[in-house]
Picture 1: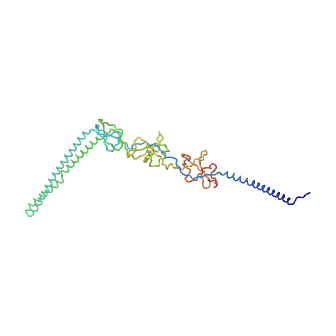
Picture 2 (picture 1 turned 30 degrees about the horizontal axis):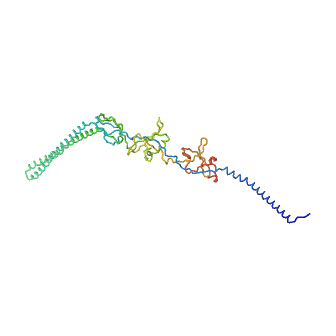
Picture 3 (picture 1 turned 90 degrees about the vertical axis):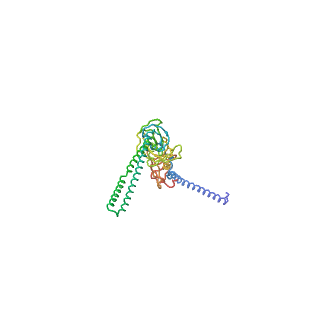
Length: 404
């Protein structure tokens, strides 16, 4: 038998040894991978069991434009136009629909008799004044005569001091008599009695002038003349209503509101109004009254307001829009509709309080796009769970890795 060389035997041995080592290495690697795979799968499964939670801060959002209503314009004061005396209309100076000022003459009645009475009273006053002037002049002259007589007697008495006593005494008595006469004249001043005559005549003239003025039918206030029932040649009686004047410097705005709409205005003192033809020109009206009880027939609540109208732009019978709310009032706490959970009779969301999910019941209001108004239950700044809330329970602790 021929023996193989020793170096060939060693080479084959080395190759077998390397093959065996390689096989053991591959086997060990496979076992290690098989051992690690179940642990990785378990970790992935556990992570999948804790869904991601998205949280955002609660804030305010606009629910739209201010809510509006319709109000009817009425004159704040309506005054009846009446005749103060009887007579025939001889002139008509204003027509229905005219804007008048207080004191404007609307119509004139036949006043010839009253004019004659005024003229008689004027003549009587002139006569009384002339009589008084004459009496005053006569009184002044008589008094001056007495003053002069007294002065003469006083001078005479001074000159008689050295004469006989009987002569001096007589002059003194004459002086006393003259002084007493002057005193009596002053006490019985005839001009005073003429003063009363002049005053009486003046009052008669004033009465005649007032009577004459009653033949002019005048506007009792500034405003819009309406329902005028006069024509030239017609007779009127005292106290008869012949038209009306609507005060237009201020107007009343009246609206009938539902209970919810009325509640929007209850704590306000003024309200914005505007004409539909010019929404940019907005003004404010003072709220005068809000009905506490509804009308038994319409079940609506009366809202009464007062607005200045010195420019005369608001006409009785027209209508205006009133803003029941302001833009600020329409900006309210609102949350994404997708964050709300509805179950049976409950409506709620989850709030993140620290690391815990807390269930919070809500009272909801209006919807605008993707947001819904929250009337009660939430505060601005609280953290709201907007996604993943369906998997939560009240009081559940959330891990930081779940929060987005």
